[in-house]
Image 1 (tube, protein in one colour):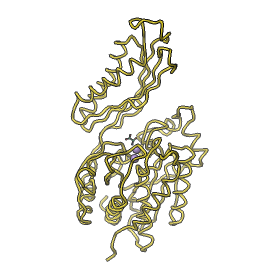
Image 2 (image 1 turned 90 degrees about the vertical axis):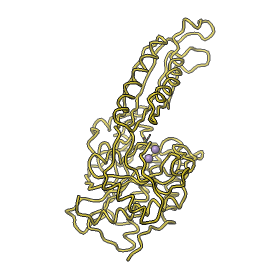
Image 3 (image 1 turned 45 degrees about the vertical axis):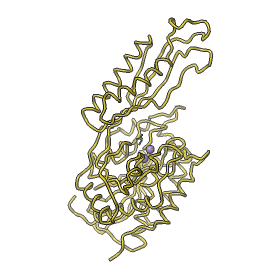
Image 4 (image 1 turned 120 degrees about the horizontal axis):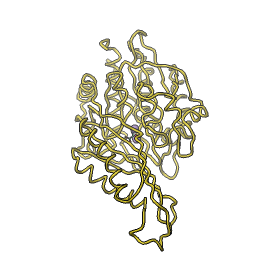
Length: 409
Ligand code: HGY
Ligand code: MN
Ligand code: MN
């Protein structure tokens, strides 16, 4: 019987090749639909073509490589993740899942293995949301959770739209591709697996994630002449909000986390009291009720801090990705395959958002995690060992081969 183990050198070399695209100053900056993301897309579609796959691109620019199955009536097994990154990212977030999907196909092609179901490897558009919001945009549109017109009209800081960028890069497609089930291999991006020395994370769900864009408006004035009690300092308000936000997360408990990731004072001049402050907020929690409560608490806090500092405020929620639980048949399968490969494993949920979160609304879905060294991610220091990548890809391959011959879904 064929030994279902992928080619580790090929997997690693391909991850390194895609990791060179958009690398500058030591970090990778393939922000969604920038030139580097376009280059990574072209490289990826070239590899799909080499494997004889049918390449399809949908209206939000998701790329799918489709491998025929013996029974075209059956819905495909889809694998995937994303090729876009945050600013100054590492090599593995997203790329691991996409390139492992490609490696599974390469392995099956090389060994002449046919499957009953078609197989699809997907690269979803704008998972990160670092340039255009919401994040997980491609999988949200794909799963009907976001209207494509809304996604197309999202703008970056310079007012450029998603649609214009898709057009410019040649990824404004029209194709449609079905998914019967979905599996995503990803680096954990947290410390648990590495700390414990566990090889595989069997992911049974993803925590909820809420994002807001906020603005505090006070009054610009002279930094030398305006007494403290007469100031309406928008940056001071935002700074207070940043500190209070942490208290809110601590008080909510149950591993709630909250972050102010961006803060831009205006006019941003050293001797002018900031009359404006633009900020972003990120809140996450795994339990449904607490996630809802946290969202209410955060938005009340923005109001309370504004009135404490005599500021006006605007607050727009840009992301409300609710907590999800994955399909137990899929989660059990990941666990079983990890055990059969004699890899140590543990069940866990994901702290980061993933395309799998939205795929789980339309088909049985699960994720496979591999350790992130020291839990570092969304930074150039993100690392995962070659062995860990190979372990994860082998679990993926074994799950995919099993699912591709299963007619029960
Ligand atoms: O979790 C995140 O922040 C990313 O968008 N996936
Ligand atoms: Mn990711
Ligand atoms: Mn990420």
